[in-house]
Amino acid sequence: MRTARLVCAVVLLAACVAGAVSADISLEYAIRAAYLAKFAPFIEWPDSAFATPGAAINICILGSDPFGAALDRAAASVTGGRPLLVRRLASPELASACQILYLANNEAAASLPAGLSERPVVTVSEAGGAGMIAFVVDGNHVRFDIDDDAAQHSGIHISSKLLSLAHAVKHKAAAP
Amino acid sequence: MSGTGKQDVNWPVLAALVAAALLLVLGLLMARYEDEIYTAQQERDVGEQAQILAASITAAVSFDDEGAAQEYVRALTVNPQLRAAGVYGQRGTLIAHFARSGALPATAPEPGTQIAGGSMTITVPVNQDGHAIGAVILRADTESLQRRVTRYAGLILLVTMGALVIAVLSLSQAALIRRARQLTEVNTRLQVEMGERQKTEDALRQSQKMEAIGQLSGGIAHDFNNLIMIAKGNLRLLQRKLGTTMPNAAHHITQADEALDRATSLTQRVLAFSRRQPLSPQPVRLSELIAGIGELLRHSVGERTTIQTSLDAQWWTLCDVNQMENVILNLAINARDAMPGGGTLVIATRDAALSHAPADVTDFTPGDYVLVSLRDSGEGMSEDVRRRALDPFFTTKPQGKGTGLGLSMAFGFVRQSNGHLAIESAPGAGTTIAIYMPRYRESES
Image (cartoon, rainbow over all chains, first blue to last red; front, side, top):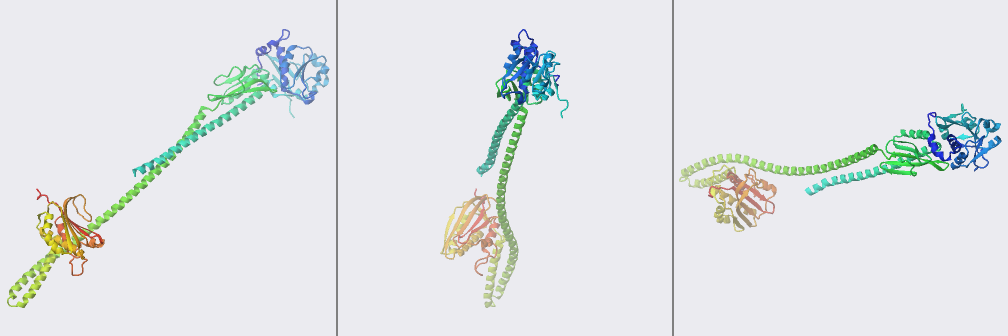
């Protein structure tokens, strides 16, 4: 079922973000930027993830930023709930302060601190990367896989609504 | 009678109509109420479905995932009541929908419920963190035509059955009332007829009794008369033989002869009663006959009885004039005897065309009659006496005063002359003897 699901047509999304797409980034990355911002409402972090109850959700980029201003605009467009802040990390040491962490490349993934997988940080990467959520390109569509097992291991709850949109979901092998 | 009958028929029908109308109004109100309840229920149901769809489709709307949205929408097609369903994306355009009939608006309408043309359209926003990011639209029949028709058909059937039951009950009750009244009428008529039959039977029995007595006594009287003749003839011979030799015997012979005369008279009267006396009928006007014996009548009844006459009859009749004079004289004397302290005797004659038999008269032929009536102002008779008055040898007079043959002889003569005789009397109200003689037309031309 899930594999049969069609995701948003690139063409339609192109109309959505057309204004935001600048010459230097591809349409695909504009979509990724929008997705990054839109993940937030469907993810629940434990209280320990935030310093204060009203604290913002930090969307961090580790490695070279492929989104540019598109991500800032996407973050601003998501209203309601906690505010979204985009941070471009200079050092992987700061990663534990993030709630969503985009790993721009494998080097970035490799540079992460050892204990980060225990922290409530949703890591996002390209296909084959180490992120809990991984962007995949299925035909002409940008989609994503979700490693729900890893997310739960970090104390993060991903909404079933989001899971239902995923291209593939990795669940815990066998629930006790 | 017909007026009340009409009312009896109309009231139940009216009541049935009113009851049926009430049932119908009540049924319509109930149907309307059910309609409203059903519509509200439907609105609630569809609204809840829309809310569920809106809640579950947030991610699909948020990520503009038309495929996922379409899948959610398609899942709703299993509900046959839904005519159409749609999801509007973040830009307010339709991103997923199905429609069995009609079309959905191209852009998201305002949230709320619209009911029109048998269908309701419910729009619910898709919220994310308190912000609308899209909308869900559901359209459903307020109620299927089939369901409504079925419900109204059931209602109409119920009302019709109810009205029918009421009508049938009312009509049968009216019929029962009518039947009961008919039975009562028939019963009353039966009672009357039974009474009349009883009277007729009594009269018939009386007349048969008279007939039998008449035949018996007539036969005896006839033979008696012959024996008396023989006795008289022999007495005459004896008188002739002894008249000269035994002067003393003449007295005894005369005595015996007189006794035989009285016996002759008696047998004559019995014969008259038994209708076997020889009669020589001739045409006569009874008014003239009575006028002719006026002096004799007055002499017979004496000074204490006043005779008034009212002789209006003009028609002729056929009868033995001497016997008729005798009868009237006898009746007048009877009347006198009924008025020991004096009184008035009214003798009247009149012409009468009778279509019905007078009271107590049997064997009557309707037609023209000359009626003679003698009405006294005497003491009258009890019903018992009146009924037996015509019986031979029945008398209320002291022993030796009357023979009990006067009235029966008159009756016998009148019947022999094809006439009728009736007695009308009540204690204290006098007695009227009426004689009906058939009209004799041949002398009138």
